[in-house]
Image 1: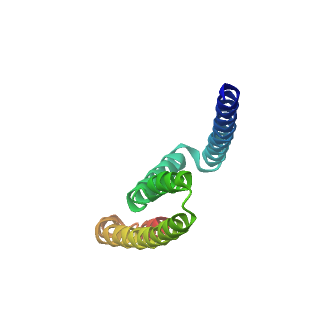
Image 2: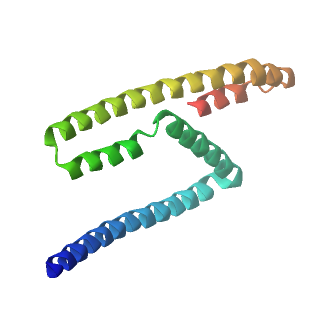
Length: 149
């Protein structure tokens, strides 16, 4: 009996270690890819372009985090709890529900993203183009509108 418990404990430990290692490797690769991407952006865009890119990434992350409603975290938690119980019918139903809500939150995110872009273009045209026409550089206004897209 004691031998079986220690074997189960060792198997569980190996399982946790294996998936923690995989997750760590994925995170390290993600960090390295971000470093390479930022270096290439710094070379091609320069310091001011890198600042604008950082602003766009921050806005994109904010939009992502506010429109996913925590579904990835809570969905995984509840699915693993149901899987632990072993109820396959309930697991299938809950997974289908999580998928449906994920699609709905993704569509909501697209809708919010497009409305933010349209609002930014509206503000840009109303404020910046009016000021730039005063100083005679109205061409820059339309370039900034395309940057919003």
